[in-house]
Image 1 (cartoon, one colour):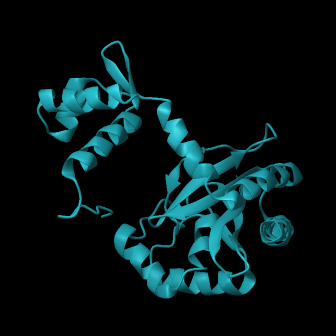
Image 2 (cartoon, rainbow, N blue to C red; image 1 turned 90 degrees about the horizontal axis):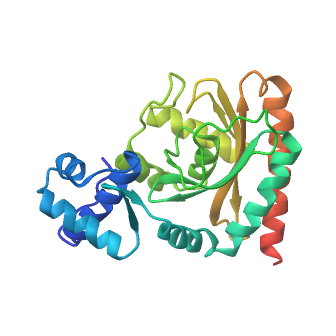
Image 3 (cartoon, one colour; image 1 turned 135 degrees about the vertical axis):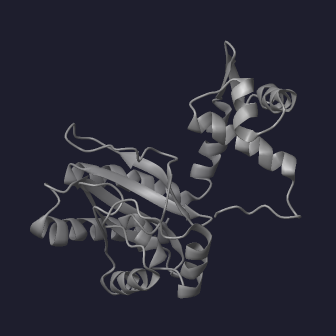
Length: 256
């Protein structure tokens, strides 16, 4: 699931990205490890790694290859190509400051959630693994569900067909009809909740950021441990705070 390979794509380019993904997943790898995991000849693995090294996208540390800093150039461009992303990123710090919890801005590409800004200001805020650049499912997070609620139901079905609804915890929504029911509620209330659906013990409150033409830009959310995000704080106070920040972002985008 999730593969887009077809006769209109370049296999060599796809394999090159597989090599990069492997280096990220394994925190670096030797030529033989790349060859074994991708089931290719060591000489072929070496050519891919040598090409990536020559283009400065990977670095060599001893006999091991690692992803290089040049990807920051690519990622930095992607992160700032839309001025609205920068506006949202600036407001995320305010959200983290107001709540004392981890705050994040998430965008969606190819049916997946990508964390572009994650802010932790208080030592008690929970970081987990939601670092900048982290790719997650949309259906199991507050920000992701807030984005899905802005989509047509046909587009949501396309996301489900491509990525499925895998369970990350026992609370993850894995039934399409249950998800559609949840998205209807979010569309009405403008607020999405993650009640330990992506990580046990973690709750989140999120809301979508849209343009004046109702085009979804992304979503913001605030996350924290279930023992702190409960009762009125989880159901009312944090939603009000999140929606207030969304309003600030959308007004700034509209008049900038």
